[in-house]
Image (cartoon, rainbow, N blue to C red; front, side, top):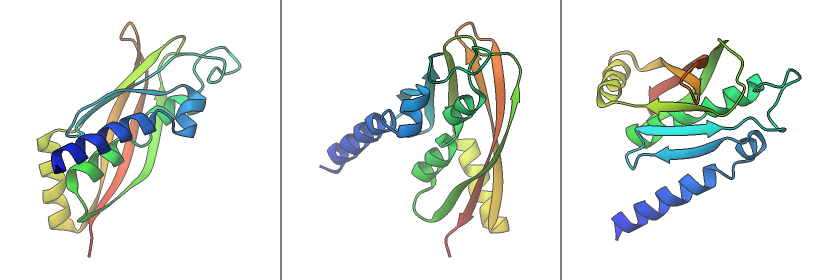
Length: 154
């Protein structure tokens, strides 16, 4: 029964994310998320709603693609014993996004183990994740360094 409940929660979360207001407005779509929440892929086509003055992907929409993912993935993988918050980000634009773009997020067991060890030794940490947003041809559109704050609950 608990496996079925988990599957239902997973499916609900996957569907609900695609109805999240900022994602609907920007056209961001969750294409895939693994059952263990260690991999996710989102896409965003170029539309009237996310086009800037020059007719390319609006920078804020590009950033919104990557905003919650590593925080959500860590919450799901580290569990309730941790406080996890998005802390900051920097974005470096490389080329204009002129069509559909995508971003992928990977959380390996090695990263999880590194975080647990670091938090146990230092009480808290800021983990930086690098995310690349690419177009359909695989051309790098921008890089985002996403900073996530992690600490053990008292």
